[in-house]
Length: 69
Image 1 (tube, one colour):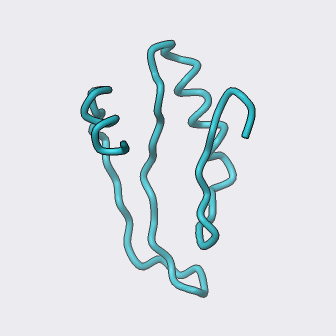
Image 2 (cartoon, helix red, strand yellow):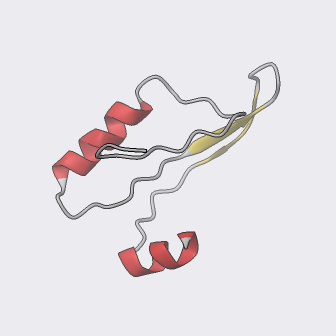
């Protein structure tokens, strides 16, 4: 892959229409941001909401890298 940014979308996932624009906007606000994550929703095969995950916690860089890698 090439480019300035990377976004992961699994085969069974959907993005909200403004997801990428909102995340790029957050990156642009603060030049120290390396990774952006967001809230998400679990839906069934008919796109009916099952549950939501909402988090406002900001990880410190070293902790987030340890979780990912």
